[in-house]
Image 1 (tube, rainbow, N blue to C red):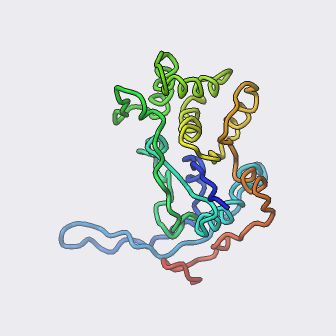
Image 2: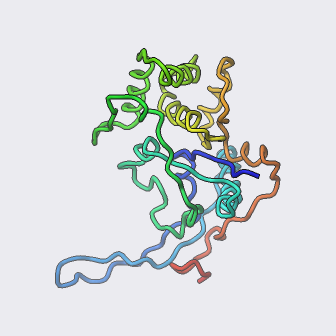
Image 3: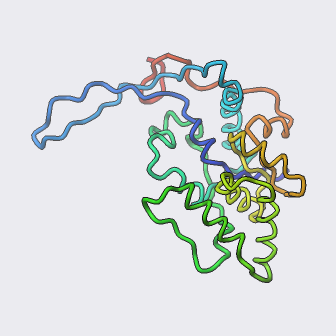
Length: 241
């Protein structure tokens, strides 16, 4: 059976934190005037309140999905278009590897669909990331290329059909996933998922899915436990304190 190829959205990485770091007070100033922040350990995250039921269901799926990735059942991919979104965002990804449910999972690099077009479109530091990607999508929609790029632009236009430009940043990710032969684009952006469902003309090989959709589609009903109990303290190596 071939490995399932999945492009992972930044929104999924942002909820992959399994525990919260606990630090002790820094020691007195050292001769050079620097202070050292010392990690005491980590404690398991408290569950989300009932009002966040959708996100809670997605989070519950992550340990199972991480195990499938480590076992080679699925392959995770990322690419610069996703990385850009995390630039300058505090705690965008788990800061301590131990606290990341995807710790030890390999993320392969996907080629961006934008790379097929010249001149290259590059992000300028300091510019709002979402604004940059929306404008980039609009520029591409106005292009009139021929050959292979014409076919790629046709796919982009079919995805954008009827969508608000507020979703164009996510459209670029889904477009790249489709062009590069991904089977799934994994996200927890429910608004984008629901908006794309209203597009009756878009026919893609790559499926836009949430973690619950992914496991249901694979016929997996069980859920692996999270590695840290809520509120319990663990050493920096992950052992119960």
